[in-house]
Every structure is written in C-alpha cells, then in structure tokens.
Image (cartoon, helix red, strand yellow):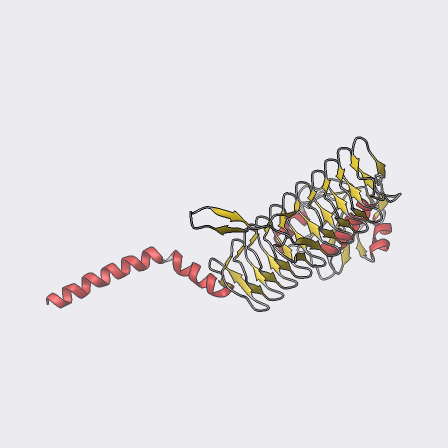
Length: 344
C-alpha cells in the first residue's frame, strides 16, 4: 500500500515539514531505511542517523530541533514510538484473517467452535473446552480439558494450555509456551527421596495478556497462579506456582519468579532478573537486568545488582570496584610504612 506523506500526516495528526507529496510504501529502522520508507526517531542515541537516513519520511517529536539540514520529510507528533506502534498495529490488522477448521485435528464432540474461529491442523482440543469468538488456534497446539479461551485469543503453533486453565479476552500466547504445567512441589522423605505433591490449582490469565515463546507458567498447588490484566511477558520466562503478577507489569526474557511471590502493578523488569519465593513486590518499580531479589520491595524503587540495591548505590559501588586494585596497592603501601614507623 502506498500513501502520500500529507495523507499520513492527516491520519495521525502530525505536523509536516518537507515534501507533502512524497510517497511512503514501507517501514524500516532509521539506519537501514531506503527511499519510500517511513522511520522514526525516539531514542536520542540515534539522532545522528536522521542526517544520513535514506528514508522518505521520519516520525519525530514536536520539540525536535535538527542541528543540520534533514533530507527526509519530518512528521512531528507527540510520541514517535507510540505513533509508530499504532501504525504498525493498523497495518498488521489488515492482513487476511484465517478462519475455519483444518484437518486433521481433534476437537472433542462437546466443544462448540465459533463460526469465525480458526483451528489449525494437528491441534488438539479436549472435552469441556470453551472457545470465545474469533479465537485463533494455530497448528499443533494443545488445549486441555475444561480450558476456557476468551474472545480474540491467539495461540501460536505449539502452545500448550493444560487442563482447567482460564485465558481472558485478547490474550496472545506464542509458540512453545506452556500454561499450567505442574508447580515444582516435592516433599523430602526420611530416606532422602522426594514425594511429588499433587498440583491441583490452575492458571488464570486476565484480559490483554501476552506470553512470549517458550515461557512457562506453573499451575498453583492450590488456588490459582494469576497473571493480571495487561501483563506482557517476554520469551523464556519461568513463573512458579501460586505467583501473582500485577496489572501492566512487563518482564524481559529469562526472568525467573519462585513460588508464591506476589508482584504489584506497573513494574518494569529487565532480563534475567530472579525473584526468590514468597516475596511481596510493590508497584511501579524498575529492576535492572540480572537483579537478584531476595526480599520484599516497596513501591517506586529503582534497583540493580545482586542482591538488588538502590540503583544510585549500585553505581557508586561499581565506581569503587574499578579502583579496587589501586586501593589494595595503596593499603599494602600504607601497611609497609606503618611497619617501618613501628620499627623506628
């Protein structure tokens, strides 16, 4: 699809600077864009690319002040990144939507398949499953007995939903994710062996949750593991049994959350962060990559390191560590001088 810069500006409410008739037919990163592409500038680290980009048009903030001439047409908006996200979502929504049932697949006799649903080949839909409107279940998915899928749910190829779990509206579960596997519960015995504790709870995903590829969310020992509305989990995350993750919390890849930890809303969690079990984490916190969180955390904290500490304290410690060898040598020299003084 091709659109003029002036038409796009009218669509997104942008102020235009440059050629209003230039044609846009693609999207690209600012450093890789070619003529005909729309790109964006949101991170100041990439500002230098705007003077060399081959893109035909660039989304920039309204307060952007170029230091050199810019060849591309500028589209000034309040938030370039958010605007681009809206445009990309619109383009993606125009893709043809799959419907119907592909064979071979297994659908239990008591399952009602909505007319606008899609079920791919080799999918397995067990008895007692409830399917909402416009569900998309791609090939080789497994949906266990008694599962509920809300409206507009998408399960990408190979996703697995164990029995009894409940998935809200507009949830997306990517390939290889496992929802509702057993929690890690084993009782040590006198002879040194372990007796498995039956995990009889479920997993609940509320509305507008997205689960990344190969992420696993364990079912509760009793009750429910709960992922609240709007949570976004990256790929390769482990969520233990009876965990709760609050609304609109986002987590990057390879995080691990041990059992029964409760995480509040609007937290931002970097990659490879680990949470110990049975913790209470407040709201609006930021956890830098590879944090190790051994204890409870309040609200509005910025934490780094293992064990996680205030980000400013961590920065000071890092600065001291760079001088550790120098400080060690200074101490050795001071000890020698003290010994000399003692002998005198």
